Image (cartoon, rainbow over all chains, first blue to last red):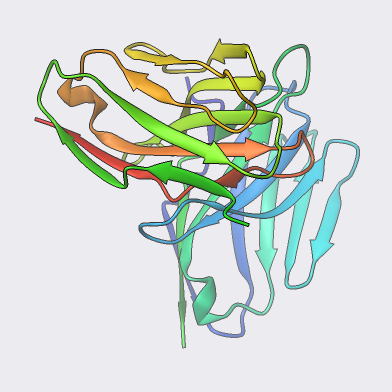
Length: 115
Length: 112
């Protein structure tokens, strides 16, 4: 049973518009939430994160929203640029007990930004 | 600053062979992890370490061994390769929760 789901395998957006990537989780023990971006033949690159005590975190064009009651995480990219085209993974961390170092990843969403 | 270095980048093994995937980081990070990425399944945790001498199993540990004798290195050993271990393997390191994890560029392994 998957604890973390990215239900949209792909998303296509026009340059300059907003991209919204979504992630749902089932385990309330997750307390730190991260987004990664991955280009082909490269490792994932850390984008932005949020702790469970917050509901929003911004970094430039990237904003992450956390809705704990709905167990839902989203990443907003505004404005979207062609260079943002990549696979985006949400990754959840659970610091309870000895869980440091363990990330649980979603399946990924392929974002394509058209010029 | 090299970050996280993985070697080799590509490897083909025959079923039953053993090998070690190397991972080294030069950021003095305490936490290191190994993941495998398979189509449609995201990244799954194989083994992780919270410091030198301390390792633990992740979600898919069967068929793999790890050790952490130094802070810098975290090798992953395939004991007897199977076709089901064909995958892309990523090593990652971090100072701790809240700092993000830095990933290596991956090792693409094919077992025939």
